[in-house]
Amino acid sequence: MKRILAFGASTSSTSINKQFAHYAAHQIKDAELILVDLNDFETPLYSMDIEISDGIPDSVKRFKECIESMDGLIISLAEHNGNFAAAFKSLTDWVSRLEGKIWSDKKMLLLSTSPGGRGGKSVHELASAAFPRQGATITGSFSLPSFNQNLTSEGITDPELAKSFAEQLELFSASL
Image 1: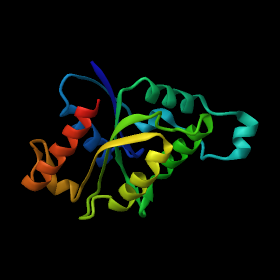
Image 2 (image 1 turned 90 degrees about the horizontal axis):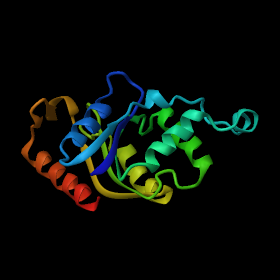
Image 3 (image 1 turned 180 degrees about the horizontal axis):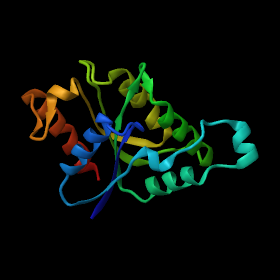
């Protein structure tokens, strides 16, 4: 059985990206899902001075071990002013200090969403360019606009968006 790690790249207790990552993970059949919260991997903002004086935090090592023990990753990116959320960016900066390949050559379903009509596209584009250089194999990619209107307890409500999401989910699932 394939092991899939899913999380929203935000520390908000009400993160729509965490909700979206968990929704996506639950659409995959015959997989062991490991759903995590970034708050479980709290770190100080990355600083070379902190690394020299205190070393790499244990939470960073636990996060990297978690990634390495998976077959696939589902990440939904929160967008803060067109970029990664600060806590997520800092965590990945720390992980890169363990070894260059943050994502350990894992298959990835890259997601983003936001309350607005662009669905986090700016951060999604940044990750699409950077993550492969950091050891991710992005096998599915989808941005959901207007989260509150387009995702309900019944699923993705817009038929075209639902079809596109299902296609990307299938690409990811088939790659595992």
